[in-house]
Image (cartoon, rainbow, N blue to C red; front, side, top):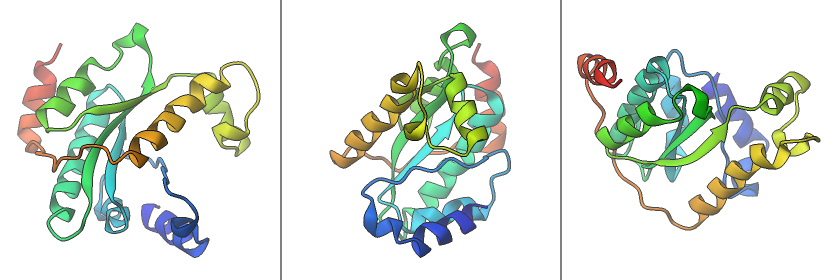
Length: 172
């Protein structure tokens, strides 16, 4: 899936057309294909939720960025917290994870029904109409501005699989 997305972005000339490209793909199974975009990227950004499965996958992606950074220019710019809902813990686990692996939270996308509806309608958030549009699109505008401002980057220090169970399991 990720490899095909990279091919399509290249085929449509989008790498030359846009300064910032962010695409979100399912991360429940992290495989080698997830590192393919890092060959073309200046910055690695992880989109993750405030839950164990998402943080476990994010840790694997940190490993991919750390490995790719040895041969490519890519560095970690940070993590975008996805589906942020203050009623259900906000970003506490994700912030602790980011600090542990030497990166930071660089944006927060709210939990909002417009995001679900945009996917069902096959539209981007920017094409949607209705109440809440600005709350949904503003994090991406802010993120693009941040990335264009030459943000600080790191080479992440991912945890081993056992450590992530111990650390995330110990956060309460």
